[in-house]
Image 1 (cartoon, rainbow, N blue to C red):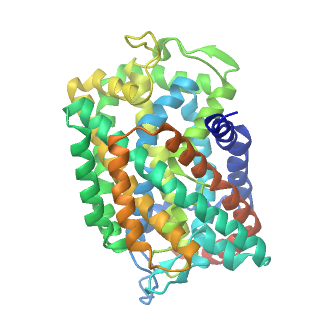
Image 2 (cartoon, helix red, strand yellow):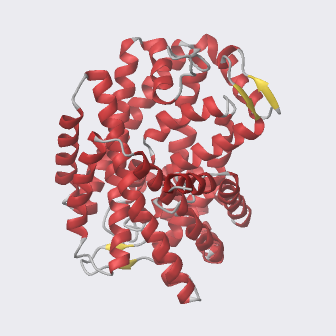
Image 3 (cartoon, rainbow, N blue to C red):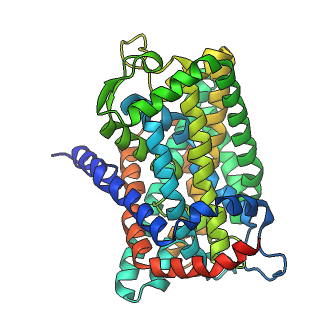
Length: 462
């Protein structure tokens, strides 16, 4: 058995049914323990995004505003998964996969809330006077068994650093280069140079620079994509009722052919569940432990406040952006169609075909621009995740600038080369981050519950 086969076997487990059950199961457990407060307080959370901390408390510790923290986390999560991942899920799991994406996201709200609460509660100030936090610090500072905490924290950090170069960098740069090359015929080398240059300029300033860029780029790209998607849905409005009906019918059907809006897609409820949950988790990263690293940098007066703000990332990513992609595809008539090679159209080609059904050639331009913005912002967000994880491993900030430069240069390799084994490896590392993180969430769930109920009085007053 060669390395690639071993890697494939590990990857199948990491993103397979067992792990997905653990991810969703942890979300269900936390939702029940928190008495559904993350759901009940979603309105408060959405209002808090722009309000920041308590105005009566001006001495809030942190490096960036709560809004910048959320945008940095969203930068890393709203990416190719929202464009490519949704299309893939709907082909492999049928239109019903969208419903299971929604279900996983609902329970993912509690997971993302809990992760972020622990990140702020157990964060530290590093030697440069900046905040350092995330699952690794929660394990280190929150576990009563310090040895177990440090082992899990170290494993998480190793997985995060390795994942940052692949899933958070090379795959994103390659997506940008491919999109610009196929749509605008821009050479991949040119794209690679531009991505690397922009990355160096932005990343050299650290989290404050990343936060300032993300607070402008992320809302712009999300609103642009959302508005255009809604436009396509309105143009195809006559097909929307049939598309929505097919989505719900196939989500709970034992096995059926989509027909109509789904073409020749054949899927069972189990495949809809598997691919919907897998692509949902891959897109919003609830349970993987990445987003809390950005949450820890926020200026806030209470861990629970930032927990609520950061959990809205799952709402925006999956309930809003992924839903738009799903409804565009379901109403376009593109799902279940075959390409010139006789195979089902999937991935980015399916999304382009769906947008083009209403917008013509402009549809391909829009998707290409969307991928470019989504993927580049993902590179920025993941650099911070990898940097903080490396900082934890070496117990110093001295390598941060070296890491930023190396990370930017690796983007050039990603843009100009297809290294499938590297991508598969980083995909596996990304999934493996969930194991120590889920253990951390379960072990420290009492702390999350305490912070949540303690803060509820503040929520009620609002």
